[in-house]
Image (tube, rainbow, N blue to C red; front, top):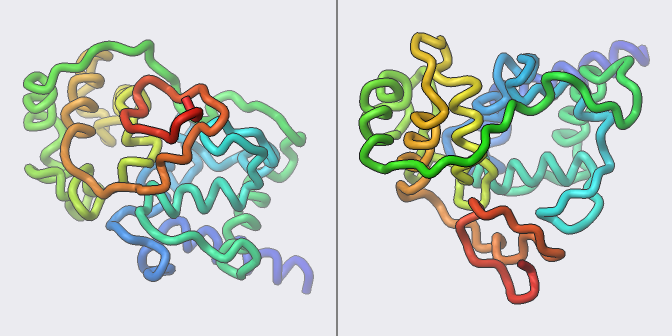
Length: 236
């Protein structure tokens, strides 16, 4: 019985992550799902995999300025990347997601850093809007739509149905590294690092939802230069 209950919880957690808006419409405020950024259902190496994530929490995060639990990290994504509402940390939805992460981390030592976690980071380059618009038109439109509105193949990249300004992907350096490492999804064309920064600059200078709570980010300082918004005095 114990294994059956555990399996059912992990499977439901996986289902939520793969069909987030359908599963939790009251908590998702846009057209993204968790697997929009965590590729291959969170299993792809260098594609922000969830494998091993469970054992790296609790961890200190500079953006919150405190030690976060894995529930805090999940809710951060709901509030920012999903432009939605936090889950009840003690509720069944959160429990099932965490159970799935625990299942994916079976056998991984506590605190272990793994090869392929996250995605490779590029050295910052200055992006160009005009070049970025050209790259977007030639490479990204077929999946993300001419106005970045998203299609059945890929999520929206700006506008009211996309991630908000407080999301990690709203930072140009983060978006450029993700694009360079993983886009286009079918790898029909490999972009150069400069092209990745150009198109990330174009995407992240389009309009998107605000995140008013962003002013409380990095309360102990260390705000990244590409987090292009004001924080409260004494925070940076």
